Length: 618
Ligand code: ADP
Ligand code: MG
Picture 1 (tube, rainbow, N blue to C red):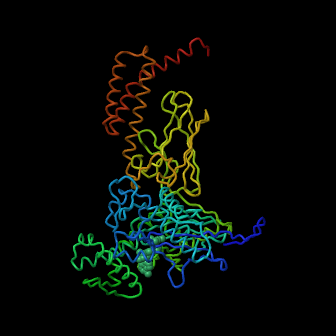
Picture 2 (cartoon, rainbow, N blue to C red):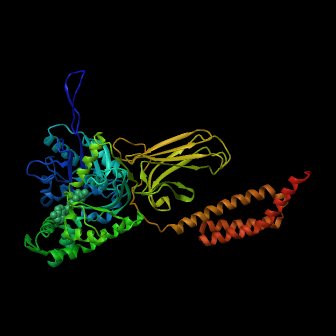
Picture 3 (spheres, helix red, strand yellow):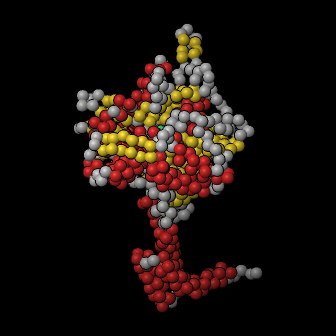
């Protein structure tokens, strides 16, 4: 991985810089490299210590900041100044986390619920990007200490469900930590790389990656062929992981001691102590059948079968998500060749048992489940360093991308689960005569109305030469590059006028070009069909009215007063339905207007044909 070369000009030795792989986890983070001799990925660690660095930051009164194990010790005694699970806040607004707000024992700012969250420590405010940067800086320092060489280039992994904003936030955190982030890759892609699945060109496999960490669950279905990794579908739950196992144990103990749950919520220190004990119990129960201990005056006890009963519904939820992922990929468990286990929580016996039963196969669990993502990131780093050219990595978009069209409807250009890099072009036109500009608003999400989706950016294509409505050809191109960054380009083909925008989230450390971004929770709702058909009926009705009015104005001389009066009346009624009516009512009135105008429309048409034929001999 590290190459030594001689600079001919100066005669000095040059060491080619090592690229490290980083798993920036919700609970734990770590660095891995490809071992220069064995050529195998290894996690970096100091002698006799764990490779895992708890993703925890403590801010001391004297301004001292500690990260990792040291910070972890403050969880109990100084919870307000000890930040854990910062990854859960990446790219989120307070509205996004409101229902889970009690989870955080530190202060998450809630005064402006729309904007991105900040964490308050004393009189200072930190963004999740800055918090992640503290962790990355610590990882960089540790790696430099262990490798005894500067480390400034990295591949960082993110969950497959991270959206563009969250990926960019991770990139920004890297930059802030002094790292050149060469690539952001999906955790499941990294995990399969670590297992070397598909390393032989002739390998053709469909793989399920089951990742149950501390805070999140992520299931991905990958297809490997010709040395190419393709993510077919992803599913998961942003709020399901080992933390929830701990929480379930804590709740059991609270119930047993008749402690008032709201009282514990307020007594953050007791809550943290119970949490840490619960985690200890969970690990213990993997080896033994019973755990007995105490916190203060509270006697604590739990058996393996009690534990399994507590977490069974949580494990079932992961299997339901797995079922959905399979369905999205158009597969059944029988199509899965390999199942890869990732995340510390897959050490729980019940989890392994249930996942193996669900897929009906033995599991890949030989590598350390909490290191496997970082190991894969190191493999990717090796590929980027040019040392392994056999691979090409493909990822997918987790959410649909599109633009706003008439009536506030979402017009999807790149559907979710599309492979990236990808490019798609579609043509649009103007609605009004002489229209010189078109506003393009880019959205991300699965809802039919753009107002329910996330606005990523908006821009105007201006300078379209004056033309009748419908004549300009505006070609809109969506391009997602290998990093998952979206470039939107609009071009009027007749005149060549064009405009492009790179869509990055608003809070990028240096990038201010994005107009606005609404940070609302990303809803995958699909119950909008009724609204969509209403909006479509309204649009159709408006167009019908426009055409009818234009027809009457043009052919007034051939029409009778009564026909015009009746039509005007029908138009008034239709206008009323557009404003307040149901879809069926609008359609009925469109039909009525049609019935009314058809006879004279045909008559006028016949007249026009007769006129055109006049004097012509057949
Ligand atoms: P993340 O990807 O969220 O950072 P990890 O993959 O490091 O998380 O997993 C952390 C989770 O794994 C924690 O909830 C931890 O309690 C759990 N865990 C680690 N070791 C064990 C074990 N032996 N038994 C049960 N759970 C474990
Ligand atoms: Mg993880």
